[in-house]
Image (cartoon, rainbow, N blue to C red; front, side, top):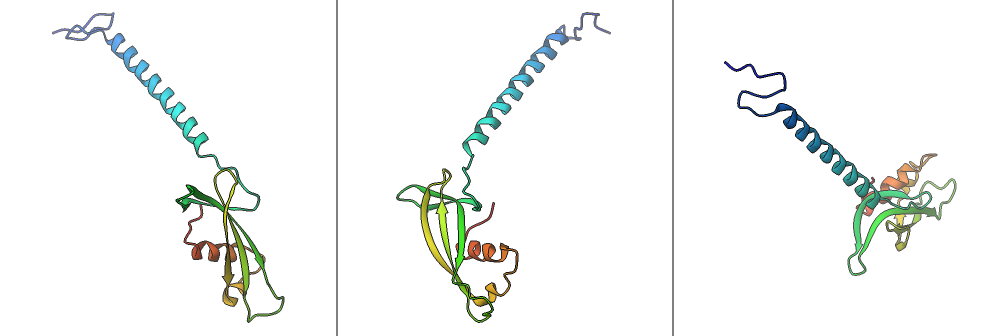
Amino acid sequence: MHKGNKRGTTKEGHNTSLQIDFKIDKMKKLILFAAIFAATSTQAQKVDTVRNAIQVIPKVFNAINNDTLYQVHISAFGIIVGDTTSGCNTYVTFYDRKRNKIGEKNVPIPASVVNKWGTDDSVIEEYVIKILNLIKK
C-alpha cells in the first residue's frame, strides 16, 4: 500500500503540486479572458442616448441604408383641453445607436387612449411602442 511521501506525489508517481499549479494557471487565464470579453462586449453595445428618448430592442429600420433603430422620441400635439371626444397626434423620431436621426413618423392617438392620459406619459408611450411593433428595453 502506497501512502505517498511528504512532497505530494500520488500512487502513480505524479506530482500533485504541479497539477494544482497547472489548474490554477488555467483558471487565471480563463478569468482574464472572461474579463476582457465582458469589457469589449459592453463597449460595443454602448448607446449614445437622446434626451427623453425611449430605449428599444434594436430593430432594422431601413435595410438599404443599414439603419438600426435603438431609440425613439415621442412628442404629442393637437391636444384640446377639456375635449374627451377627439384624440391627438404624436410625432415620433427614430434614432440609431449614435444619436443619428434615421426617420420619423406621425402616429395618431385615439380619444380612448388620450382620455387615460393623466400625469404619467407611459399610456402614450406604450400605445406608440405597440403600434410601431417595438419592444422597450
